[in-house]
Image 1 (spheres, rainbow, N blue to C red):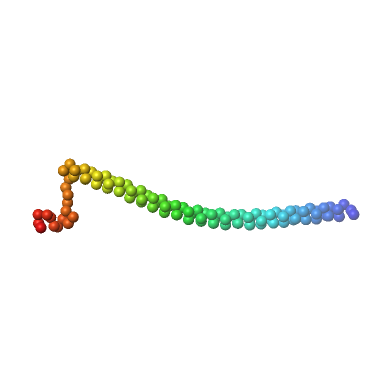
Image 2 (image 1 turned 180 degrees about the vertical axis):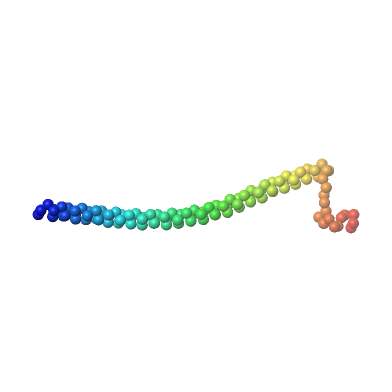
Length: 107
């Protein structure tokens, strides 16, 4: 074997090594892309589940806020009723008839 043949063999081996390495890189990149796609799909599902959980939490928060408002209204109504009862005890309040059209003096 002379030096030119040996040089050609080394060049062919070098080209084969470069092509083989490039092929391995492409295979690894393909696998990595598949993994990223799977992770992206999983994260998409999780995000959808979180959105649903947030919607249900919002509904609960609204219901609790409405109930709190109703409780506060009941408390203020009870306070007004207690004040009216106290006024009646002192003789300061008025008692209205149940049916205002039939006043006691009109019967």
